[in-house]
Image 1 (tube, helix red, strand yellow):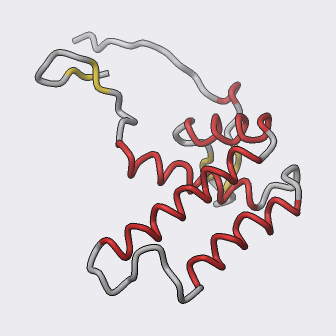
Image 2 (cartoon, rainbow, N blue to C red):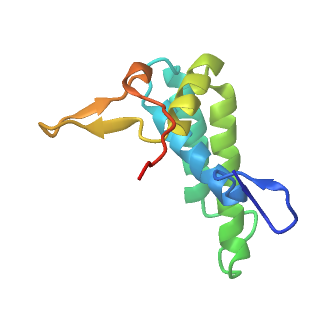
Length: 130
């Protein structure tokens, strides 16, 4: 963990609102294809979001530069958040932990992608001796 100019710790995963939106988007995408998430949830929340984005009436007209697109982005963020909140908590927790682990999958020598298991990871300290 690094320090900023004020001396407070800065996390490597601290990307603000856009980073959170990206992480929630990845999580929602994985939830969408997970069999443990109810099918009704998979159709209702994304369907409402798609209907809003496709409907000709907008909260803020798209003709207004920037603001017209920001309301669509806000609706997308809220729909993703709602989808995650309504999904089973154990599945969300499991998939969120999987996203936090960097290098969750790797390619073996034969080119096949494999899931990395906790017992496959070796965590050691080392030092170079001349």
